[in-house]
Length: 293
Image (cartoon, rainbow, N blue to C red; front, side, top):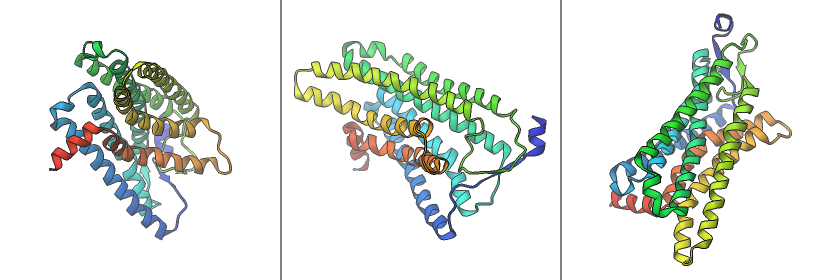
């Protein structure tokens, strides 16, 4: 550890090889997207807090998802914007480690929160009469705390394995944030924290689909599908990009391809999530209309 701190004290994140005019254009666009991300997720949080009718387990977990998305963007986008303005600006060794730790903590927590939200929908549709008993506030708090705690602990393990590695070669890194030093550990974590939770979500929705098909009325089926559609879109965006990043082999220039995918994963996903929930969720839309009127 002492050798690490004396040999490398800072890194330069190279990002995309762009000319100055393109960097300024992207700086403006990404700043706008960053503002929309904070505004959209902040609006979701505010609506849930202000409307007592949204004080239910479903929206309780949605508020945690919005918190993760805001923190996710705040962890990566500011450094990205700094690099666009001044590509040679270094980031400290401690800053890299902190960014890595927070990135993994938030990513794992979001994985688990999406599983918890799928379980909530499963109970609501497959066991509606027992919903209040199963999804009590004690259980909801326990599930959310477990998601955050697991994210923290697994990221801490990765950080412990990361710190002893020798950082004594080039301090230039081809990424906008620092995540792939210990690639084997990241891949192992990706397998366990993507495939496992995603499989649980698939099983939950298979049970949900089976229950919906048993509903006799068309209106009942429509309402059941509508409560799941937003979550399914978010799951598709999050797990789809993450699995492509870690499991699909790249062609041509795989490192550059992953940079673009990670850009989508860290910037566009958090921005799109509140948009998806506001457009596809009637309760959120109705509450938003009441607030704006």
